Image 1 (tube, protein in one colour):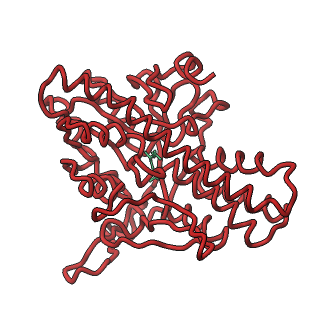
Image 2 (spheres, rainbow, N blue to C red):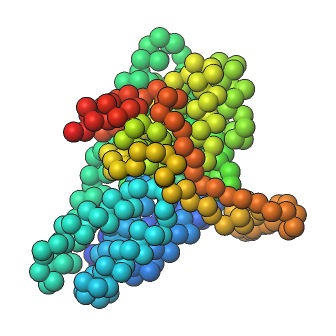
Length: 358
Ligand code: MRU
């Protein structure tokens, strides 16, 4: 999608400099910086500090991380150790392990001197596939937006949480892809963007990318969605997910669950958009999902521009106050109207997912 009118993807391999290029998302929306990842440590760090984030993009970065490991030291022990470190770098988004496992499988039985070529081709394939899947998610979700528009004959108001936009994937996004497709088709859409404390991915990233594509959007504080739903100002919700269990339970950015409850209470459809790489076919009980707990400084401090236009981080509440920063929560399947996938829309249930994918 576009930034200042120029098409980008979130990650790509630069043959000339033999480096992986990423857009540093910790600097957005105030600074647009492209960064080189040259070692597997760079890739691990980029995932940990969230220079790259969002489940599909974390997966793509991990795949390229294996490429970087091979470039550094073409030694099976080093690659194995690097794979393990990559998987540990963020625990909740399953795309990370999915991508590393896929790379490992592809490399098994391959001769050492072929490792780099095979790994690079596979990392590119993972990313190209994600673009294709996210595009299809958009086309499948478009039909739902179209249906609402045909009944309402007026602007469709969509609420989203966090950033499940193109910046969270390789391109198109998951939750935003139907919105981009609707906009391209001339359907009037307006997006309520949950700010998404503590890291503000909604305000900093979703609103930014929608602005760049000229899609009307309004940032709201995380607690505002409920009253907007009661007032009839939300037609549907679409969110992304970091891990959706085969039972249909959806793990996503903290606060998603509360939006789903409010949507249920107000009879508003609540959709989750995801590529199949985000489905966890093993865990049955949502309590077994590893929920990432991040540094409490993400809550107690905030970054923005000062009066001179310089990036500045400030503390916003007492140093003495204890804080807790759980990054994800789980929305039980019963609150999810449907899962929008690359293969179609299905019920959030074991049957729904298995009918579509097995
Ligand atoms: O902590 P983040 O910013 O990586 O969390 C991102 C989300 O929660 C997204 O909704 C999810 O990864 C889906 S991205 C298409």
